[in-house]
Length: 474
Ligand SMILES: Cc1cc2nc3c(=O)[nH]c(=O)nc-3n(C[C@H](O)[C@H](O)[C@H](O)COP(=O)(O)OP(=O)(O)OC[C@H]3O[C@@H](n4cnc5c(N)ncnc54)[C@H](O)[C@@H]3O)c2cc1C
Ligand code: FES
Ligand code: FES
Image (cartoon, rainbow, N blue to C red; front, side, top):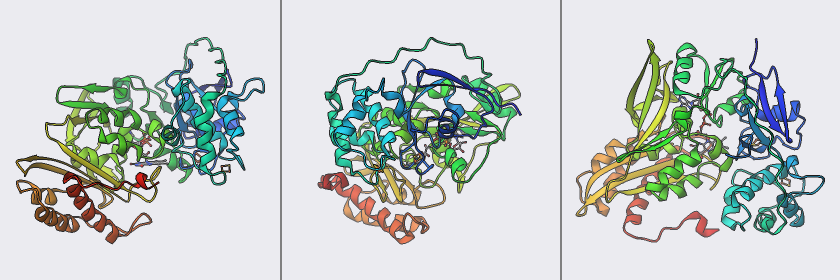
């Protein structure tokens, strides 16, 4: 079995590795092949951030943090991987590191390399300007520290701009890539036609996007993929296209960019986006991966269902590219089952632009504010005309085997006067419309109660009642 070679740039050198299996993680390659033991393994599930590294192109552009524990090593082929020990030059600590030392922001130190990388990413983005406390909190949203406490870490983040800026390391000269991008052991196609051809000829290969779901199957369930088709280099799927009436978001666009595009039309989505995982997961995970994975507690789907989103599924058949559109709610046919055929790939998520007067609410209820998956999610889009509900769409998560559209509840509201009595009837209906399960996140009765209450909240919010937000209590 010949695996494709894996080229990485690390510690200002190029490394070329052979015999790296398709399901080997970037963290394992860093620690065991490159001896970069500054990068730690805490949870191996994307939750703690100890393994955070910065991935970028060879010239340092397109830099972003990822959890190396759940990222497949081959997905980083040709890229630069920056880890904490890269930052100090000739014994001189980087401003991020010096600020953490000076603010006593490390005790056992196990989490520290991950915090260093998240703050380094913020430092680079800030480009010399001071950062706010909120920016610091957002940057470290994927990092857990069990001993230091967050105040000194946040203080260090807010002070890092006061230290002299370090010189940038010299860029390495460009080098031609002689890896076969279509090697089916780990294929990195760059064109949609290549991807669809590979899918047609290797329908059993594992499709891999950001790996923030599929990477956990490797580390938690010990699954080993023989063949992987990686979607993250396919040019067409990395595009966000704007049309007069809709946005078309490529399936490989990361969650951070996809939510930012949605937030341009609907600013409230920005706040919702901050509740989705932590920054490294949002920068690695894709919108297509969230939708295709089909988890009943996936966060983007209730919102997308409420917005009337469609998915575009594409395949190559008899040498021709074929496609079909499905309303997102029809994409799900059972618990973690979708309408995707073996030769199909989810290529686009098409989201209608808002019509005048759109009202949109979306709520996520989870145990933790950051870096946690929903117990219940509810999104509602509606239009009122002279106090009458002209149209309404409701998407819900965490209440059935799939993400769902609450059609019965919509029917109670549509065409009715928007008042407390009708909302009460809608609450009674949504209470009966779904049969949630009890699990570690919430009991069935809690989920039903929360659904009811979220409709009440939507009503009160529209009436202009001041809403208490969890973060306001901090
Ligand atoms: C710490 C942590 C926190 C998280 N928090 C949240 C959260 O708050 N809310 C939430 O909803 N999710 C959360 N997740 C889950 C995960 O991040 C999302 O589901 C993410 O969008 C998955 O995208 P991905 O690109 O990483 O998919 P991958 O893991 O690469 O793939 C997931 C599945 O989708 C398939 N797939 C991917 N792209 C396509 C495509 N274009 N066509 C067909 N099939 C495809 C893959 O084959 C695989 O079966 C969290 C995960 C972690 C590790
Ligand atoms: S080791 Fe915990 S996020 Fe990777
Ligand atoms: S310093 Fe010990 S976990 Fe953060």
